[in-house]
Length: 504
Image (cartoon, rainbow, N blue to C red; front, side, top):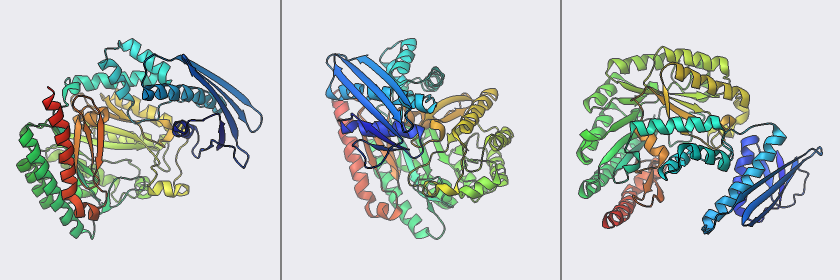
């Protein structure tokens, strides 16, 4: 789909309009200056911003069909330049989205939102003291979010605050993310740092040496500064790809290096690939009092697993789940993905029936996203996926199934290029929610990332300003520079916590 957009003089608006166009068309190409070829549609935007923002949009399709939209909102006095631009951007997005909805007949339930964390918007309004009803009305008016999605947001916010009443008061603690960049194989949809572990033992040994160093140095800083750890999460890759002996030494390092590990609220280890789970590794988890793990089927259709590059069988998922149960794992999460190649409502219905036989404590329902660097995106013609309507039906099936089986939604996030412009929702039995998932989604606390590809998100305890820092994704680069990356993180921590403590 090729669209020529006239009337945009501020190039900062080009990216938001591109993201909105992507909600409607798989291959959306926008031109902001007169193109040298015919377009499928021309959208003329006219705006004024004196006292009030007024935006008019006129869409003329190639066949002469026309659609118009207008949006007006009063401009508050005393806005900063950044706030003023945000108001203009939202107004332009309103008009742009409306004409595209009229033209295509596609209703965007998340409105103009293209960001990852919609629930954070509601949290912010409630923290500011906005009445719940007023907050809902503002979200609907400002972002064009439908009442259905606002209800889901409120349900999730309520659950999060019930599970973590002190969610807004965790700024002087931190959480830790530890990235293990190895997997048995690389899945077709994956863009996480994940390297096939076979034949890479030298890389594994070097990487683990660097990771132990990071843990020791960060642990020293936490102890020296009296900073507690709220949650700790081992992700990747697949953290259970390494050997039982290596896992044992890693968790021993955790207990040795980090402060007050016995009182960390939650420690999670992703064991997402069933083919990495062994009795010996479960024994190690038990030894170090870790009982929250993920075992991720993604689908219970064997042909699908083969197509996406997962080399385990459906039976192995079930067997390893029961093995983990027998070993005493009492908080198991399982991930399902809606919209995998070749799957529709019938296949997803089968996956839900198989899930019912196991009933894990939590279930994360993802909607397939075509991530830019994934094998699936590079070779889209190989992977036939369901259309928007069927994907939405599958999401509704998941919502109905979880509700009827006692699960409640407790976190939500969205991704670019997600099928049907839908969302990923974490469901759990009440009281079994992942605290780490809540913290990372609502950005209420600093998360220190250790290991290969681990991203740190430093949140100023008072201003809330976010500073990002990422370790390199490939093991060699990580091994060459882990000391430097550790020093840089400690420097940021010193800046954040020393300033905030001196002002209290």
